Image (cartoon, rainbow, N blue to C red; front, side, top):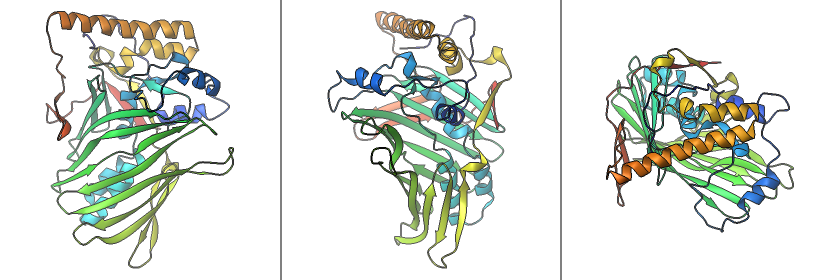
Length: 388
């Protein structure tokens, strides 16, 4: 499915950040609230076989949060604590730089709410946002399988980020495990350093108590220094809704050449993360989520917004969901999907192959996906993000 660039009227819906929406969904007050969906979720999944890949499973609008998955990906960068990267850039010690990279990475962890999911991006969909000097561009470069590529640059700090992600959700009856395949690169060009990293996975538990958590091991490795941070996202299920330990991160920083542990990490990614020096026992806080990493989007120039922009592609659907007009929401969602199916049929009838606009994409069984940005720098966007 392909987004066609045309002159149709733009209907852009500026939604709240994932963090703000999650807070509203978990509270008794707020604009958009998720319905009581447990019984309906069980009904939706009753005909899905155990072990099935549900990547392209389409959720009805009442199960959708008013946001595309591309926006989730973009927010992990422009709603993160980017000031930590500025601090990192000023550090002269490579170990201290890695510590701040770790803190920044933890700040990029987005909250997820049980019972609702973002829209599946359509092929060619983009999300383009600027925050200060940081310009972020996300593009859906493949639909079968779904692959998202991200490029972000900060010309003032001389920082570049390149990511690609491919979610693979598997249904296990009482749970869904969403494995996030992919690789991220953070380049501190002033220091000639490249940090490679993977992503944690998502675990949705339907029974006995509904919950969703980030789980798994993340490795952040500096290719030039050999320094490595190993982060373990943990979640212990509660018993009948009582107890349980969620949003926990434990980890260590070590030198891969000697395997010598330098620091230990411990805390919760939605609260604080503490760092302990293995030599002198000193403990300090390296990340405090309570200081806020949510973002407020402001449209500066509507005419410059691309027709492929997520906020435009899904504008009518997001508006309908926010109004809880489910008939209009279903109509809007079907219109987007049918329009893209039509464009796909037209392309196939002409023997045309779709090519991403902003990335060069390749795939092999040995290497997997490789998404390289075509441009060296991301341009300033007409949509601006501000810290709130």
